[in-house]
Amino acid sequence: MKQSIWTETAKKKKKNKRIPFHIDLAFEQKLS
Image (cartoon, rainbow, N blue to C red; front, side, top):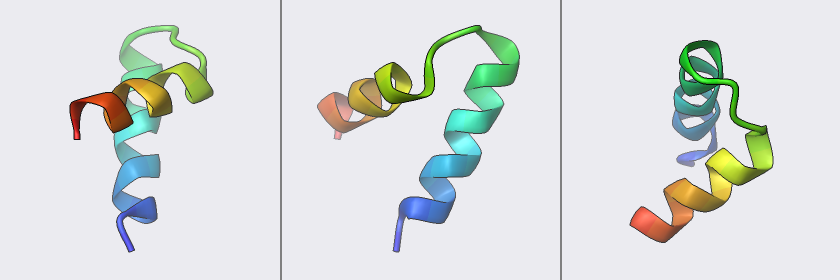
């Protein structure tokens, strides 16, 4: 399951940039 990795990445990004979680998730999905 990539969910755990995803969540960690999103959390790290949210710390660096103030991006809403769902937007960050959608962005990651677009890249992959």
